[in-house]
Image (cartoon, rainbow, N blue to C red):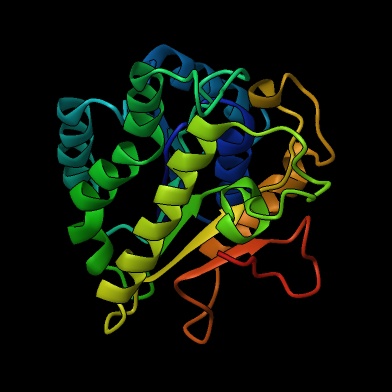
Length: 245
């Protein structure tokens, strides 16, 4: 059975990604900063007939937590087929380029960028042992420098400098990771799940959790002829799919 690890999977989009991957035949490890929360959602999934899931304590901001998770999964399996770096925070919705504090930047970057680096580097050896490994970094169309540089862009009348900067940095990490892994079977892409109705957005948005999950899972399942090192947003660019960086 193929395996997947989804970070920040105890609720919202991450939970839905875990659900959909399990439904497609994966054994899914639900990364949760609070283990009790992870165990609770596993019970709910089990009640829905989804039994190929297991909660694992994983705080992407804590090196010891990440390495403990890696050690535990290393005892359970010899390879990892899919890594979905989903855990992320917004940093609040009052963010100004002039007023945001360094503490705000450090807090958000620690999860949205450094957390992805920690987890990816910790699990890359298990990914390399899988026949067709996939890494999906959950980003946002708001991280597109091209779109954000258009001051008349009707999609983004509000700017969130801390959040956008962290995800733009994540996009650059995605590009470099894909480049370094170009001669391996590993494919790495950044995916915007869309403006999704979850706690993250105060349940506002134009997209359902189910649709957001499908957009991410699609790139976790691409074949060997699929893309790598790309940035996708199928809510905002359904025809082209890819977003300008």
